[in-house]
Image (cartoon, rainbow, N blue to C red; front, side, top):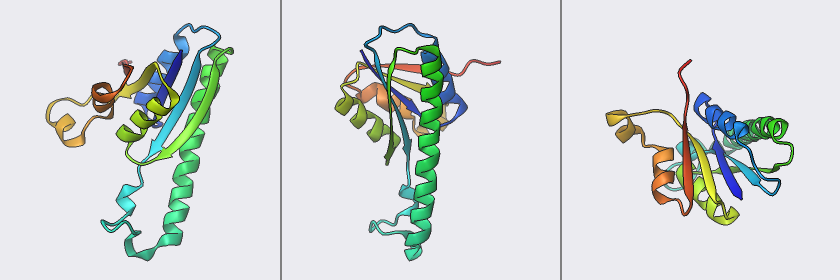
Amino acid sequence: MKILLAIDGSEYSQAAVNQLAKMPFSPQTEVRIISVFDNSLLITSEGTPMGGWSRDLQQADAIARKAAMGKAKEAAKLLKEKNPLLLLTTTVQVGSPKHAILDEAEAFGANLIVVGSHGHSGFSRFLLGSVSQSVAMHAHCSVMIVRKQDE
């Protein structure tokens, strides 16, 4: 079985990591952890950096990439502690989380995608969009959406 775990470092994606860590897996199970950061807010409609601040943008991009990789490695460490036989890999992607998750699931050959849910409803979901909802609607495989439990 191949599982794609999508994380963003939020408490909601941590709930997905924790849920996955509790599950039993066969020794052949592969888990790929994907962390996606969207740097599109720093790019103009012409596809060039705002204000020509390319060095600053490169630094911001490097910082975001390092943070995303750190989150992925933390998730991998927790999963490996709970399930030492899991085959784990991590990847960091730049772009729209919805598209990056779907593209990675396809390329990886995932049988299951696991994502956290931010719990938006109604109008806020309409305004903000929902990565988990979009992934569930368009994925080629099953999707497990994990809600954060109230404490």
